[in-house]
Length: 267
Image (spheres, rainbow, N blue to C red):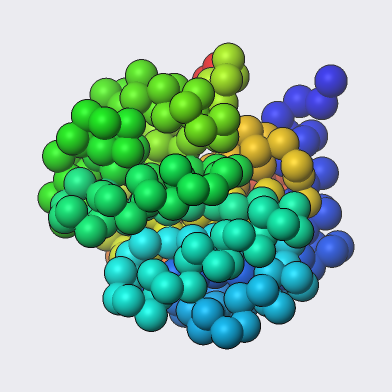
């Protein structure tokens, strides 16, 4: 059985060798950030919300990421057709329910999508995941008012209900699916001061899901890489602006030595 480091290295090598296309219907605030992160890790991003091309783009993609940061009607209209095409093609889908609990639209939309489709990975902050599990998680806009550990039981319930992997991002990330559960430590206190790094973690879930059919392993790999790269970037950054700059470099350069020295996973 592979260790966590060995599995993540195998997946990272596969991303860099295969250059999988990750199609994202995503938040216009973070499009550039997540596209650059995918390029840095070795994947190939396509960002679109044109319903007319969804089926074609899904056909060339290794994963589909649906991010609810922008809930304009033209974005929403593309989500069901894209997800249906992904299901038909066997393409894994990652859902990020940005702001679930902050408004009726942001709550009912991901719940409806999950009711109609099969997710591979759902990634959100504690409040978002608690909301989807039915707790009314108490979001403040797109920010969480709950801690990761408070959402653990709700994450497990959501994972069982939808037979998917669930990630709760925070100071420590929680990854769960079925009986499997892990906490990923690391990162930097600077990371929440850069918009879109949660969305970046979701995009990385897409890259890992494109090369690993096990949703739990894919989600865990993405969380570890995000924490390790964030920690590496923070050591060189003077503040949030340069953290983002160095994060791309860290994702690009990340290797076996970095993972073995910095990986902190509790099971």
